[in-house]
Image 1 (cartoon, rainbow, N blue to C red):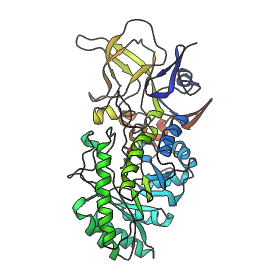
Image 2: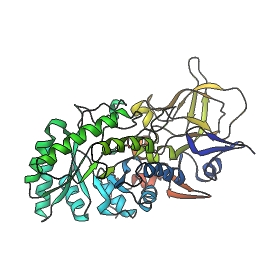
Image 3: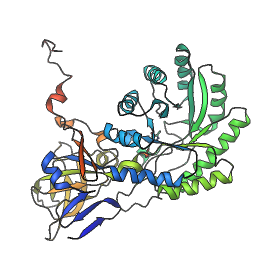
Image 4: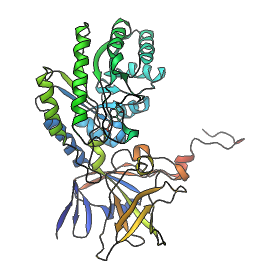
Length: 430
Ligand SMILES: *Cc1c(COP(=O)(O)O)cnc(C)c1O
C-alpha cells in the first residue's frame, strides 16, 4: 500500500485510498461519530511547539499558548502538560485553563475590555500578568487590586505601528487599531504605572497581527520594542520580561511563513546584537501551534449542477467554519477517499440560509453524493468561533494520539442548546 503525505500537512497522509491522521483512519472516525467532526492531531501540536522550543534553545522563554485559537479543554491539557503558559482574553478563558490543569501563575491576560469582575477573579487566582491595553484600564486595575490589598503584575501592550501585511481584520499593531497603547504614549503610561500603588510593572508586550507570513514586521517590532525598553529603563522603571505576542502564519494555500525556529533564530540574533538576548522573553502563539493540527470532516449532502456554477452542498457550514465568511479565508478541501474520475469545478457551500455560507469557491473535486471530505487547517479559529446559527449544534472534537482517538467534546444536542431558554409563563424547572 502506498503512503502519500499531503504537502505542508505532515500529520495527514493517504494510505492507499484512505486519509489518515497519525494512525487513525478518518473515514472510520466519521462513520463512528458522524459529521461535521473536528479531528486534531496531538503529534502535530507538539511538533509545532517543538519548532518554537528549538528556536529558543538555551534561552529564558515562556511560551504562552494563545488559547482563543482553540480553547477545548483537551487541547489546553496538551499544552499544559508540555509546560506552556496561556494567553487568555476573558475570565472564561481563565476558568478553562484552570479546569484543564494549567497553573494560574503561567497565565497572562490580554484584551482591551477586561471588566472589574474579571480583574478581581484573575487577581484572586494569582495570574502571572495583566497585559494592559489602555491608560484607563491601568487606573481601574490599580483600584481593583488596592481594594483587595494586592498589587497587579502588569505589562503594557504597545501598539508599535508596524504593518504585519495580513488581512485588515487580523492586523492589530497599526495606528488606528483598537489594541495597545500608542507607541508615543508608552513611556508616559509606564511612568504613570510606576506611581500607582495597585500596580507592579513586570513587563512589556506587543502583538502585531495574525497569519503573518513575513519576517520583516517582526524584526521591525523588535527594534521598536527595544527602543521603548531602553527609554523606560532609563526613566528608572525596570522591565523584567519582553513579550512579542503571537501571529506567526501557517500554510493554508501555499503560504510560506518562516518556520518558528528560523524566525526566532533571526529575532534572537537581533536581541543579542542589542544586548537583550538573556532577558526573560515571552511569546503568545496561537494559530501556528494548532491551525494545521486540525481537520473538519464533512459529508457531501447534494450536488447541484447549474448553468453558471456547480454547487457541492456539505453538512459543515459557516457556523462550524466561520473563517471563509469572516475573512474570505481559504481552506483546502480534500476527499477522504479519492475517486479516479475526471473532476468538476464546484463552489463548496453549507446548508445555512446565507449567501456568505461558503467554504470554498471554484474547487476542483471528483465527488459524489455521500462522499466524505476533509476541510484542512481547521485547528485554529474554527471551533473557537463556532455558533448555533440556524439551530445547528456544535460539532464534536476528537484528539488523535498515535493509535488512539479521544473524544474531547461530544456533539451538542438540542437539549444543550435550549437549556438556558424559557417559554414565557412556563414554570421554571431547576
Ligand atoms: C490572538 C492573539 C494571539 C495569538 O495570535 P495567533 O495569530 O493565533 O498566533 C496572541 N496574543 C494576543 C494578544 C492575541 O490577541
